[in-house]
Image (cartoon, rainbow, N blue to C red):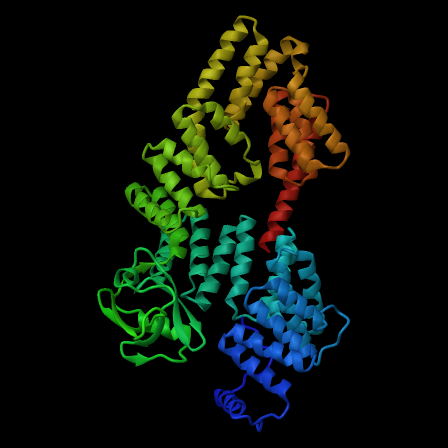
Length: 602
C-alpha cells in the first residue's frame, strides 16, 4: 500500500507554476514558500526526490514550517535515507508532544517513522511510533503492519499475528500484509499456513516475483516440489526479458546510462556509462518516466533498437543500434538457486547442476547460489569444491549439513563431527523436508564410523580398558541417530556401572563445566550454554553434563535442544534419583513448544 499524505497537483498546474516562475510572475501563488512547497510536492509525486528535496529546502529557507519538515522526512524516507528521515520527522514534531493539523496526517507521519526505525533494526522505537500512529487513527493498516514487523523481530509472534489480522481487516487488498504474515509463519515452521498467506499475496499481485518466490520456498520446505517448481518457473519468466543489458536513471529530463553489463548487447554495440539518450527508434523521449523508457527498450529477442545518444567527448549525437538479447537479471540468482535445489530433490541432477551454475554466474556471493552449487558438486563427487563453496555460507543450517556431508565423503570424520555437533538442535526440524532428508543422508554417511567406534569399544572393554572404550562410544554418540544413540547410551551405562570412578569429569570437561556454572549464576545463559557444549564435547559419556546443559537451554526457551539433552541424560542414567523429575521436565518443555506453535499458527 502506498500512503499519500496530501492531494497531488495536476500536471497542468505544475506547468503553469513553472511558466510563471520563469517569467518572473507569481500569479498562481504570490507567496514564495508556497510555490516552493507546491513544486516540491509535484516533484515528489513524479518520483524525482532529489528535485523535491531541493524545493522543500528552499521553502525552509524562506519560512520554517512543521509541515515542510514532514515533507522532507517523507522524501528522505522514499530515498531510503532513514536516519535523515527520522531527523526531519522529529523536527516536524513526531515525538508525541506536537499536535498535527489532522489526526490522519499525524498517524501517517508516525507510520512512516516506524518504518524508518524498523529498517534500522530499532524495533522498540518502531513499536512506540506505531502505537502513536494507531492512537491517532486505529484504522491505519500500515501502522498495524509496521507494528507486526517490529513484534516479529522482537520474537513476539503471537502479538505480530494479531497486528497482521488487524492490518488486513482495514486494508484487505494490500498484498504486503499477507506476505509479511507468510514470512512470520515460515519462521514458525508453519509452512502450510505460510503457503495460504503467500497465495493470497500472489492473487492480489500475480506478477510480483518476491511473493512467487516466497510461495515457492514454502512449498519447497514442505517437500511439495512440483508446486514449488511451478511457482519458481513463473518467477524465472518474470526476471528474464529481451533487452540491452544496461542500467538507466532519469537525470533532469533525459535517461542516462548508469551501468553497462559485461557481457551484454549494449557493451557489444559501444554504449557507455554516462551516455544521455535523446531518442529511441526516432522518437523523442524528453520528459518520459523511467518505466516508460525501459518498456520501450524491451522487445523481441533478435530485433534491434536504435538510440540517438549525446556523449560528453563527442560534438555531435551518435546513432547506435543494439540487437536485443535475452537478459537475466542478477537478482534472479536466488531464483535459479532454489530451482536447482528443487531439481536436485526430484532426481534431476544434471539440470540441477546447470541451474546452480547459472545462479553462481549471476551472483557468486549469493547464499542460494553457493548452497545450490555446493550441493550439486557434492552430488557429482566433487567434495573439495563443495566444501570450498559451502564453508562461505554463514548462518545456514542447510549449508552446515551439506558441508559436514562433504567432509564425511572426504573421510575427514573429525571435521564432520565438529560441524554437525555445532548445529543447534532447534534448527534441525522434520518439518523442513529437504533439510531433514539431507540430515538423514549425513547420518547414513556416519554409519561406517559409528560401526567402527562401537567395535573398537567392544574390544577395549574386553581388555579392561574402560576409559578408552568410553571415549570411542562418546565419539559415536555425537553423530548417532535417535535409535542408535539409545543403544550407545546403554553400552556407556553398563561400562559406568562397572567402576564408579569412571563418572569423574576429565580435567578439560571440568574446566568448561565450572565456567558454565559461573555464567549460569550470573544469569548469562547464552555463554553458559556454549561452555557446557564444550564440556559435553570433551566428555560426551558423562550423564550430568547433559542434565545441566538441558536446564540451561530450558532457561533460554530453546526447548528442542533442552529436550534432546535431557533424553540423553535419562538414557545414560536411567536409575538416577532425579529421573522422574527429569522426565516431567521434558513433558513441560514439550507443552511449551505446543503452545508456542499454536500461537504462531493462529
